[in-house]
Image (cartoon, rainbow, N blue to C red; front, side, top):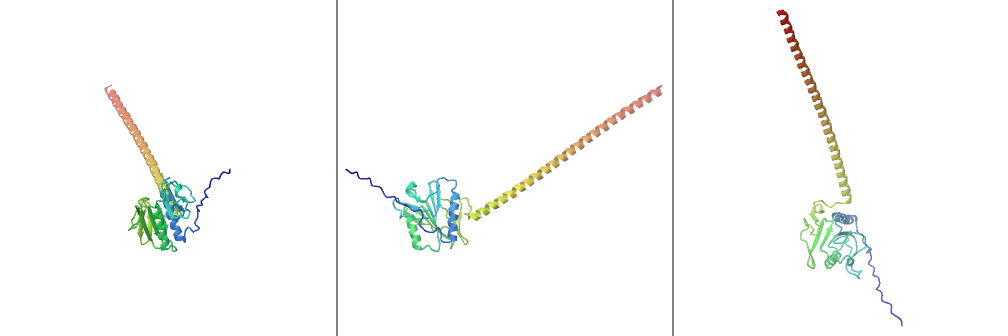
Length: 265
């Protein structure tokens, strides 16, 4: 009697690449890097915040066809670490709460509509679309089961990230909760170099001031010592004069006594 072998489930492959480029042009690429890098820096001290760029997100186990690769995503409550893809069922069922898309000229309206529908369906709480070419940004905030558009993004602060958005004639700028703007890598390096130069100049100035103070204190101490020596010398000379005067008076008194004695005789 033969025993049927247990059925083995076929291995499901979740590709780590969708074959699409990360960006269509240098402007889009730079913005993806800036947003991802600054958000990673913002949460560098939070081991429970995962920030990624252009990472495939699979929300449904067994369905590798259901996927998106947000330009930038933030999963709060998930540990840092490298991943080939974001498999939601292996992440405690936690979807990324915040997603950014950076527009490029090749993005179509229908494509962006499908992305909004996907993020709404699979649990994104905040969704932002930045258009660097036209200097604009749009945002959506979850209310219940739906993502609702944010009416005015100028001055808007993300409830989950604490990041503030500004839309001006110069374009879109994102700010840290403490008011510092998001910077490119080049700007970070330049700012760090300038800060180091300022610190070095301040250290040199402090050293020079300390040396000047030490020199002034040494000069004051020398002058004080000279004054003390002069005062001691003057005091010694005064004492010597007083002693001489006293001896002179004693001598004069003795001479008067002797004259008086001789006259008496």
